[in-house]
Image (cartoon, rainbow, N blue to C red; front, side, top):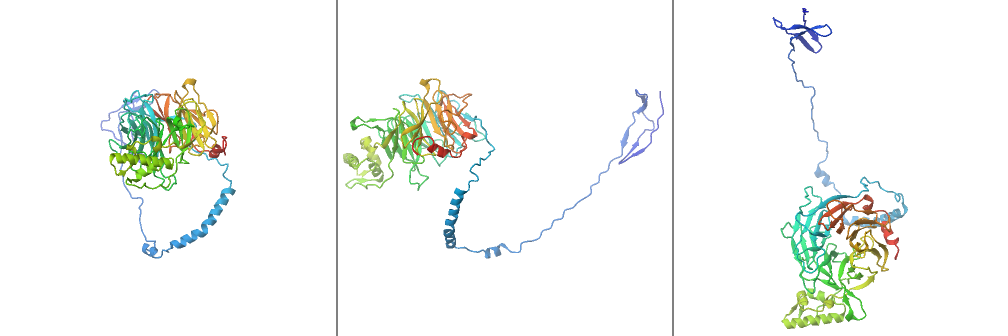
Length: 566
């Protein structure tokens, strides 16, 4: 049914709407389901909307000077105080302040029971980094080391089961462990070695200076921060008076034990040839050792004394003159190097003795040995027609090695039943020494009583495969140390929690091997522990919070609560 519709203009608030219909409207009437009709085809259009921009707010700026005096006038009015008046003031007030601070230290116990609540208190142990070198096959990790800043990780590859001549060449690799662009299989620095390096040690204060001892008996020094293709600075030679067998340990020790020159260090090495040698590294010259000791088994008859092969070495960080040597026979020697003493002076005669030669002459154990060494060297000089005596001439004269490198004054600690693979002085308590052996035992000694106050046997499936391959004290916790087993497993001990069992076993899962050959704590990032295994991989683990953060009273606990001397 068709209908007629009319449309009218209407006004909507804000808009004016009107209909626009052609003279011949083109629409039709449509009826919906409810019976209502409506039109289709009609176009409705609004008028063009006009836009107008108006400024609603303005900002006015004004500046004014509020300083009444110029800087020059302030300087002119500055009061000058003499240094003498300041010194006199401190002389009179400092004793009073120090006395009050001492009283406050012993009288105020308000925070004795306070335990801070740290944000990062994770009690889980997880692997944070794993590195290796692409293309290296059938090589083990011989040694791992962190530099003094805790950012650079170094490792040496090799074959620890090598006997006789070394026919392999294995590199030393370094990674910047916290570099965002780090590629696990691509080291930042690769040093090619003829043979392989048994042990590594970074300089205590120069982060780029790295020392290593090789299987062939050479001591090498590299400056890894030089940016050169070959960063080798110097190296020693192989001689009867140097190391002729593999260097087992290299360690930086203070050159000035008085503490006046804290940044001067020497290098100490030990080898299975029975010698502990000390090298002067400040001039980057490793031509000759500056001091040495021969490890001899004491006997009533001097002719029956035999040389003890050195397997491990540790100088005390708290008493730099004291050092411990672990031997292949299971003996553990506690020795001291003599302090620098006044020279006896240059020998008088027709030969001119240089200072380097006099330093070697002064190492003789007695005045009689010194005279014998002097006569031996001068006899050689007369034979080769030499007028000056240098360190080189002393070594070329081929004196008795025991005369040149005497036996140190030492005492025997309680022995192991097998070769002592590791010794480590505590960095917190001067009389505590940690040792590990192929007999599967780990001992903590009281160096004053020469007895082991604690003995541990880390878990092992079989008695014949229980050798300890590495061990080290924590760099932050006095009562925490880590032990690695040759046939698998790294165990963390905390003496404040248990004196018998480990409190944690590292989760050595994934692509690496369970058999760990070396481990080291990070000196700065105190929760990080790096371990190298026989598959050629180095893994870095983040230890739980309680095993990393220092605990109240643990140094006293380590010193007094484990038995032994007090």
